[in-house]
Length: 457
Image (cartoon, rainbow, N blue to C red):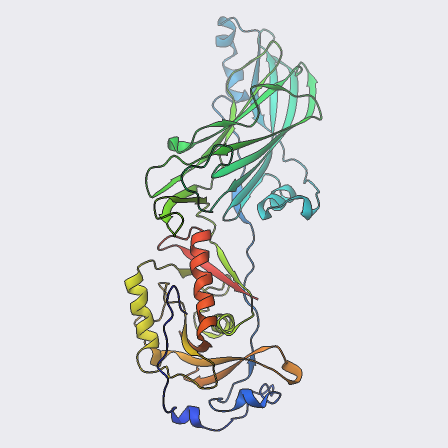
């Protein structure tokens, strides 16, 4: 795979004996019989495999239970009523956890994010992807008469928060309204009884470590009655002056009732850290100015279509190499290698050890290696050379029952224990996969040493 630079192969004046051999019958499925041109020089036993989709589509990950925290929950408050009475208080409010809210049924088209759909279907848990998260939970506000020590009222609320991070580049002049990340928050009063009346609610979101300025979901304390839903958003810009910073968001919910004193607000914090960085750069925003944020615990997936030879090379390699590199649930993740000198050395070890020789059947043939040179799983990183790799030729059938399908023809050294691939791929299509990888690294803020998956098809 070519990333950032086109490495032109040196055209060979002669092919190896194996490549010069005549057409060889394809695999047991008769894969090569439909296309005479595909099975000429270079086809070996086992050739003609139809390339199938590879990898796993990304989905929201579970981040754990949504937990409200209370500095003084109702249990502690009830144990300290005498002290509150001495302070001259008559009626106080406190927080308790409540049973999980019912699943919320909404059409998928109404909820844009994967995490948002999941958390509404399974309340009480956090769900997140690389750039969004959602949690939904209930809590109870209890009113206590200090003199009688009796509960005089209760109110049950459902709180929902969606967090949307912006991984795209910004030039450092982003306004608060635009934000590098923002939240959508709802607070609904499901039930109220007794003295839990005249309630007003506020919601504030802040960052740990002063990484961003706090913002209120709505202005001040707003009245909330039974069945009413308060909706509001917060926007945040990362303040970090360092290349990379991780922090958490914290949400504080405050309820005030008529004639009541809330002993302490309730707060909850997503267990997933937010990571912002300024390590990427391009012609518009050089390194240090290109800023974005992600949830680093969510391992991102690079999605590729199955439209060209380079993409077919990746899909076949994921399915057939010993390590199934990049296939979530079947193999191990790939890991970004940011060092350009090391990635160039990886490419040279695989593509320039004398194994690869341009195939005249492939227009503008180039050496397309997998795992990618810009990963720590590259054959070059694992002390392999081109001679150790499976050598294949992806081909799009032009006739017969497989017309339009990508098939793989074996050139040399294809074994069940192969750990790397050399694909004979047109230079431009090779470069398209490299461009996709570079774009994926930047869009998903994949920093050096970070893991990722691939899905093709």
